[in-house]
Length: 83
Image (cartoon, rainbow, N blue to C red; front, side, top):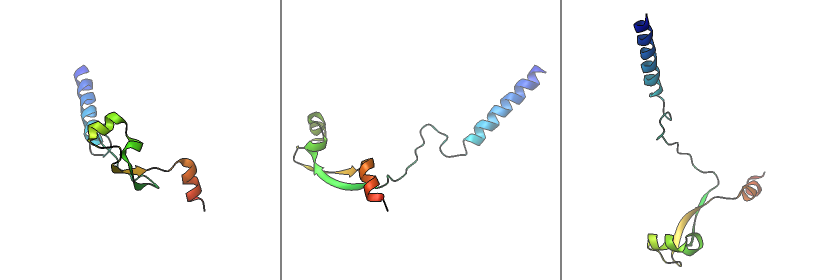
């Protein structure tokens, strides 16, 4: 009786693990890519967004222009998206 119960339990675990593997997003390493709403690419001086150690690591000068993604603040998003 114990052997039958253990066998059925093992079979159930294997079946549930196999079915869970068929769906995307069940792995810890899976990523979901979604575009960020209301963003835009802008150019800014590197010194305005990076610290001195980060500038040195990236081999940039503070005056260099870099492209960053601008995420609007909730207040700005509310004002520009009101209709």
